Amino acid sequence: MEAIFFNGWSVLGRTLLIGVLAYVSLVFMLRVSGKRTLAKMNAFDLVVTVAIGSTLATIVLSKSVALAEGLLALALLIGMQFAISWSSTRMPWLRRVVTGEPRLLLRDGAMLDDALRDARVTREEVHAAVRSSGIGALGDVAAVVLETDGSFSVIAGQPGAALSSLDGVK
Image (cartoon, rainbow, N blue to C red; front, side, top):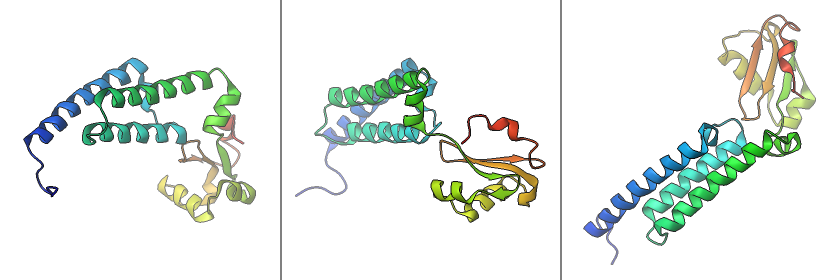
């Protein structure tokens, strides 16, 4: 019968040893690959970060995954993230495929209904973003942009005044 609360000291020892080795290895790999590896600049980055965390948990807790296999999986995820981010800075078409483009949802205080529909964003979500930025009225907003990471950027000011900062926004 499988124990529910305690499976023995050897299991705890394995978890401790593998956990420390996997953690140290992950920190080393992240330092070598650079800060961009865990930057959550877009949805793709978030997915890779979650996958790295899930892989680490599997290495530490699953007896069926050897440390070498788990470290190879981490290295593969980090290496692919490095390759994609490096390539996307040099190939605009790849950047568009991987990250998408920011989307203008409100301009000069007026909602852009087609853009809202295409981005699957409701008017209420735009209102919430405006309120959370500390602005009370849409008339005080020059623009709201849905960024590639899923966050909203609210550009305050007189309508039309701050739109020069929207380079590259669709």
